[in-house]
Amino acid sequence: MSQFPWGDSLPDGRRAKYADKNSDFEWRDRNADCGYKYVAPVGSYEPNGYGLYDMAGNALQWVRDHYGEDYYRFTPEVDPEGPGHGEYRVTKGGDWTFGPVNLRCAFRGWSRPDLAVDNAGFRVVIEPANALRSFHFAEDFLTKEWVLGPDQRAVAAAAPKEKERRPVTARVEENKTPAGELEPGPPVKGVIVLSMTPKSDARRAGIAQGDIIIEYDGVRDLTSEKFIALTARTKKTKARPLVVLIRDGREYSARVSPGSLGLSVMDTTVRGPFKRPEIKPEQGDDRDKKFKPLNWT
Image (cartoon, rainbow, N blue to C red; front, side):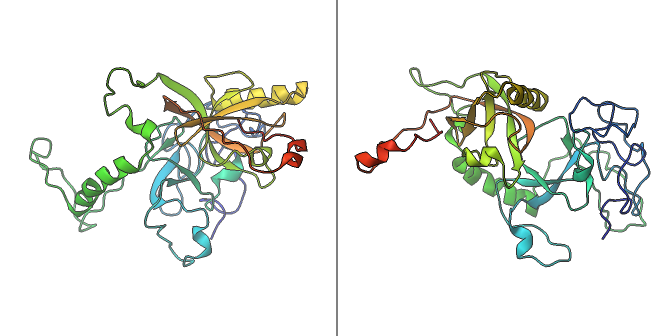
């Protein structure tokens, strides 16, 4: 029940790779120095009690569990296996861009299965039938016909249903559009909202987890670092920036407060075309007009 893989003591430059004095992040630990600006070589730190290396820091690890925000409220305390389905997968362990608090064993991030970023990966585990027997690949394992196992058959059966469930914008790339219809646009860089504080200004503006911010205060081609720098700039200028985001294939915009929005974000890329939401006239009598309009457009 330790807080970290090595025990309860706080991380430092000798235990794990995270945002230390070598990085450029505002939240970096200026007292820690691991000697690396980005990821550290595998095995640079001591293993945990099970002999596993880099269980905290360096790169986020995808795990088998689906993500459920309230899942732990209803599960057994010992070895919960995660919900049976979900849109997101859990990521564990923190990474080289995170602060020390995210290296805790209890930390639980989440992301889409089709997202590829420079601070996340996965761990390969081989489970031989007999732990005492040496494991060797067959000489023809690269050329022999692959026969689907039970797990692969389940995935193959679920894939067509998943394809139909995905947003239209995610399927445009696969289905060639006839002449005269919208064609897939170029990839757009942005940041995906991973989490937010309970009193986040973004939450009050209508931004939610999973939204992809593609523009902040007129600036596009966003990265996590650029997004943080822009929020710091608006804090000084006191200007209320306009945020453009993508949700379910549609483009929205909202005015937010200057400065930090209380968000945890990660770099991502999204491909259009994006639809504009249909604005329906509000119902009510003329007295409703005295109230200020919604932030959403």
